[in-house]
Structures are given as structure tokens and as C-alpha cells.
Length: 361
Image (cartoon, rainbow, N blue to C red):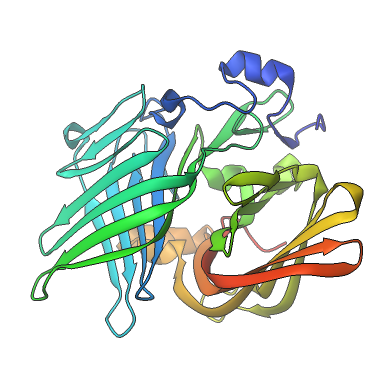
């Protein structure tokens, strides 16, 4: 797309050449550090898993607080653990700049005594806090994938960038969790890892997005629908990957349509939320896929203004900072059609999110 002041997915031949990446081929260095770590850039390495006992675990290694990047490194590890019948565990492990390191040759990140390492196939994550220790082993079932050249550009001359690499769209997970006062437990499940980065606060570029990934029967899903800020034309940017038995069967963003159903206003964040988020993909020769996220509960719900205290909080409210992040749990379904006939339908539990940086338009 060449719309003035718009946004576009980087998928031109010159994009690949300039960035030094290849169509359909991903190199380990692409999961290495891509920013300088300062000057209001941000970067994170993300992992999530659905475990066999019904637990969900999300771990994120960040160069800075991604919702408000700073001029210098402010590294942190964020942990969200939800276990049925237990209180939720939500941790932020902050570190000094000297307690951070990351390779540019591949994923090898250290924050304090925590580490995140891997090679686009196998990863090990270690997180330790005062009364919590987590060890993760992730082995990919679906090869690393990216939409186009893995960047979204904003502005008439591609002035700003948001990078995204799903390094492991789906993989097998083994997790050992040790909490103070409880015996260590080892669990298995399915997991996901991606890597994001950018050169300016996302709130200046993106109004909001839906994002989700899931393992449903033989299918692996990575899906997102991004709405650029008004300054960039409110451009809609779909990203979609559907694999079956480890092989990609649908990933052309131009063929995706987003449908939001059963909407309501979230009481805490005051943001519009859809109970049903549907990605409708029209393939070749009448083949069609529908990926349906059905919300059963909201497992995380916070406003950005509530993350700061004192005078900064008052200032945030005066400046009408009303961004919010919501994470949902529910059933994810894949429907496959041949023409108008439904020929396959599978469903499994999943997690997805709604990120709102800007005001509701």
C-alpha cells in the first residue's frame, strides 16, 4: 500500500533486499536483538503455553516497558501464571542495564538471573525470582514463519517500523514450576514463541489490535488484525497463518476478513470487546477457512494509567491516557468449507488478546 501517511506490510521485493531476508526462509539471526536498546526503541521475546492441567503461562523478556519505552535500557521479565484453583501469579522482575545482554546472532537473552535461548526450533527459558522458579523447554512442531519480510511500515516514506517474527508458531512444551511453600510440579502442553521490536512507541502508530494463536486439532493458528492510528489513515493490517499437520495451508493476508460478533463494553477498561472474533479466509478453488475465537472469560484486564502512581498517574489521566490490555480464554474453532459445504470442524481451548493503545474511534 502506498497511501500517503498510511501503513503497509513489508512484502515488496525491495523490502526483502534491503532487510537482507529471503522469502520463505528464516535465519537464526532474525530472532536476535534487532534494536539498539535505547532511544525509545523497544523489543521483546514472548512465550506462552496452554498446559495439560488447564494452566496457562506467559513469559515476556523486554528491553523496556513496551507501553512506554524509555530513552535507555530498562529491562524486565514479565510472568503471568494462571492455574485452576490457585491464585494468579503476576510478576515483573526489573533489572539494571548492566544486568541485560542479548546476542545479535540469535536468541540468547539474559536479564538478571533469567535467560531465554533458542535456535528457531528448540528453546530453553529460565526465570527465577525470590519465591518462584520456572524452567521451560519448547520444541517446535511448526517451522518459523513471518508475514512478508516481517515488518510493518508506517508513514509515506516508511519512517517507522513494527517488527514481528513468530519464531515457533507451535511446539511441544515441558515446564517445571517451583513456588515457595509448594512442591515443584512438571507439566506438559503446547506453546508459542515470537519476537517483536520497534523504533517508536506503539501508541503513536497503532490504535488497537486483536491477536491470538492456538493449536486446534491438526491446525496451528497465528492471527492478528491491526488498526493503525488515525495519523496513518486507520489502515487495517491483517496477519494470518494457518498450518495443518505442520504445513502452512493459508497465509495470504489479502484473503482475510475480520468479523466481530456479540460485542459489549468492558466494564473496567471501557473498551469494546467481541465475544466472537472470526477470521474468514477465502482460499483458492472455493476452499474457505473460518477461525473462530469464542470468549469464555477475561483472565487479564488492566488500564495503562493504572500502571503508574502518584503525580504520573494524575498526569496520565489529564492527558487522557486510556490505553488498555485484555487477555481472554475460551474455545477456538477451525471450520473448513468446500464451497458452501462444511467439511471439517475442530475445536480446542485457546488464549487471545485485545490491545488498545488509542482512543475508541
